[in-house]
Length: 67
Length: 151
Image (tube, each protein chain N blue to C red):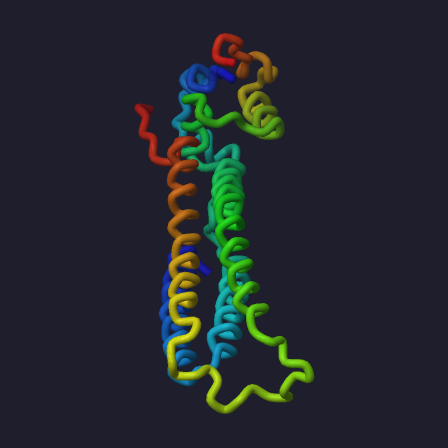
């Protein structure tokens, strides 16, 4: 699973720590998601998308080449 | 309770457990360490619930679950095998029916009997801790616990 969290973060001028606090997760979790090391739960994925005011598909997309 | 206070408390409980183990061996009474261990773990479980600054999210839970399940997956085979061995030792002697009401005064006897078996079990118990730590480090690394990134 790939994502554009880093892009959205930059657009909103947010640090990983700030986003993590908003979503009530750790900074390491945001970092792991951004790097593709951890796929978030559906709940967290929706929270992230809602936080940026976009749909889940705009933030997360399935990378078929990797699977 | 702060998380660091909890870690300090866990360390103290660990030291007490070591003391109880030594005491148990000295008095030749396994009940002391058995009851002490259960109470110690129970105390830590209760104390853990009172931590106020614990930051545990879904990724941390996943790492803990993966490490725990993998440890058990490997360890139950070893422990089951050793337990089967101990069962064989138990069944190799007459079962003693009718059973004596109380253990003989010289039990456990001073001459070597299950000493090596006890050492083996202690090694296995230590192994489970190291195995868990190894799996925890592996999954923590896999899920980016120590990654650094530019902001």
